[in-house]
Length: 123
Image (cartoon, rainbow, N blue to C red; front, side):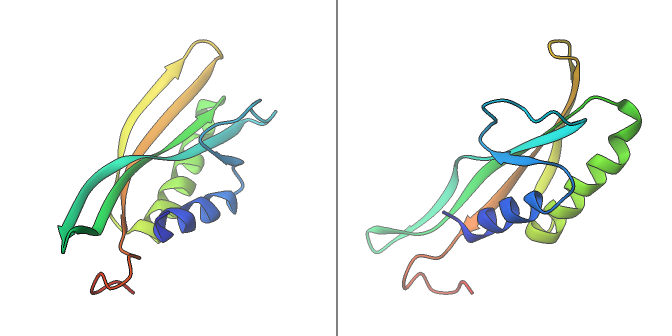
C-alpha cells in the first residue's frame, strides 16, 4: 500500500469529518461524512523485469446535508489533500443526490508507491 495513501487516510480521519475507507456499512448519523479509497493503478515504471515505481489513483468522497456548510467542509478536505499530496489532486464533481437527500463532492488524487526495494530514489 502506498505510504502517501496511508498518510492521507490517517489525516482525513483526524479531521472533524468522520471518514471510512471504501465505504460505510451504515453511514454515521452526522451532518457530514466521507469515504476514501484507492481505486486503480494509474501508471508504472518497469525495469529489470519488475515494477520499479507505480502510481495509483484514488478518490475522496464527501457527503453532507446542509449547503451552508460546504465551504468549511470542502476546505477541510482540500487542505488535507494538499498537506499530504501537494497538488496531485483535483475536484472531480459536485452533485446532489436525491435518495438520500445529500450533497456529494468527489476529488480524485494520485499517489506514488516507490517503496519497492532497490527502486532507486524514494525517501
